Image (cartoon, rainbow, N blue to C red; front, side):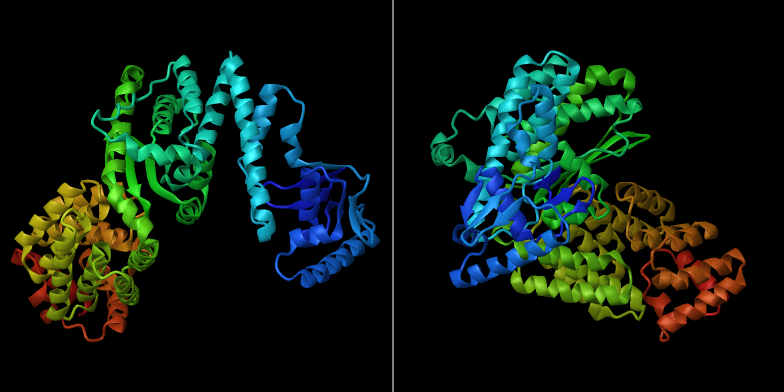
Length: 605
């Protein structure tokens, strides 16, 4: 038996010999003829389908394709098609095509399960379709999904046991990912969930004074509206399927199904969400699936942590931690689900302007995200690359506040990394951050960068005030909390700073290097020199923290390592002047400068 695979790619395989070495166009011709149930077609007709444009060139390409197919036959392969001077015919060699499943005569439950599994892949995914076959392929996809929906409704009408009910719910989520406004599927999903004792968040009615006339055109062109809906994915914590995590799993099921009833967003089906979560390059997967909103969840000793991220600008919209007591969760599940879904729904509404802005200028957001990637490493070359990249973003749109905030950070970081006391860098950092705040007063990252520039200028009180404002605007923005920690250390409150940076690390477990540097600095000023060394050693690139590392080893009594790291630090910055740097170092109390001077002098600076 030959097997023709059309979902997730396109190939023909022999059960015994493996894949047949046939050109993609020949396989496309086979798929087309089998799907259309055409045993014979004129060569000219297929040539026009497979190669758009110049028809003489199409005929030439078709002849070359036939030659390649015949070479495969000469090598002993059984072929399901043959060619005459005027036609292409299907032979009697049996071929089992995966799409034939949709017209198979199977038990309804098994048919639904198999069709659902097949549709986790895309028909002719990754195939270079000629323009003449793109519309045909879309029609085939629509037909497959319509068949799945028919099977779903048939099974849901007779589902009596738990297994059937679970299948109905999973397929409903899958269907709603494609058509979020399918009210019939929504109702079936809600009813199946309620029968199992699940809780859902009831949607608020539309305001009485809402002008419904604006929706008249939408009813006429539903498919266009569906494609414009933003996509949201709920990423469940790893291990959520374990039996021990039942309360949290049940709660996430409540949340997922309630989200499926929202009309303002298309919720990605769980099977897609699982693939995204487990993929090594999660960010690229989110972009591939055109995700606008990410609901990221994590389980920990303190319960369930939920955060909502607007992916185009990597902005944290909302975050909350829920203590999950297994003894109380059964009775409190509905209330927790209501709070989560209400918060998500509210932030979907609040971010509509941001979403519209992104859709109008997606290239600006993509450029901004690419620029921000350079700030993941705390090194001078990366900081300067980020600055050039942010400037390119601002050429596209000069009033884009997030890019201005990022540009401000590059000036502040360069001031730290060069350690030359260059006041011009701090002046540019402050002015750029002030412009970002003026353009977008609610942007937490703008206040964070203004606070950072104020800190290094030496205005510690103004810095703490600005960091406090950033935290009020976005309490769970890890970078703002991290900056606040840095300010507290410079305000001669290293214990408070260490507590703050611990919170930032909890919010951002895979944190960039500057988090570890700040934690190391706080530990150093608390006299915990071994802890400071440990934090710096966790940095991906510890070169920027060599001076602090050398001082920490010196204060811990390991002079050999202290001198080694001092030499490496001097290689990176041979112009470092200890007293000049200490004279501009913005700390509130003299004892901090004294203990830092002591460590650096012991290391040999």
